[in-house]
Image (cartoon, rainbow, N blue to C red):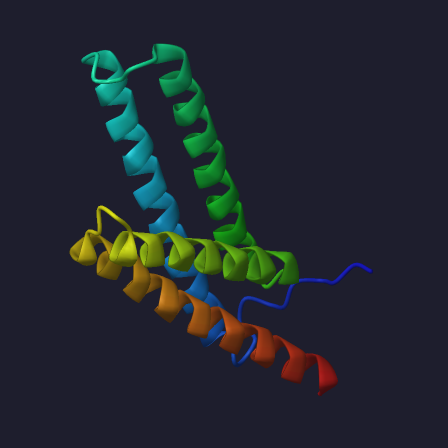
Length: 136
């Protein structure tokens, strides 16, 4: 079933736009992480360079996916909101590990968890708004 994205000027798109901005910022964060990984690879701060390259490739692919979810959410496509919700849940899982793991880093866990919680709430609100506008 194809769904035409809502008009850019449609009322009630605030949550979707906020969710798209949060996803775009998360995409930027993942790209920065990939940059750090490249620097680590170049200065020789990796155990296995082949694994380091593979990790960089996967990180860039992940950033591309999050960026695609951001763009789709901005346009009003439902798959972007769904993908964005999955991203928020995955980030929350990582944040929980950072908060409670054997090598717990509470500050890192909070830095990851707070935007993920906000993003999750905003994206769920966007889904509800999109559903309500479809019924109208």
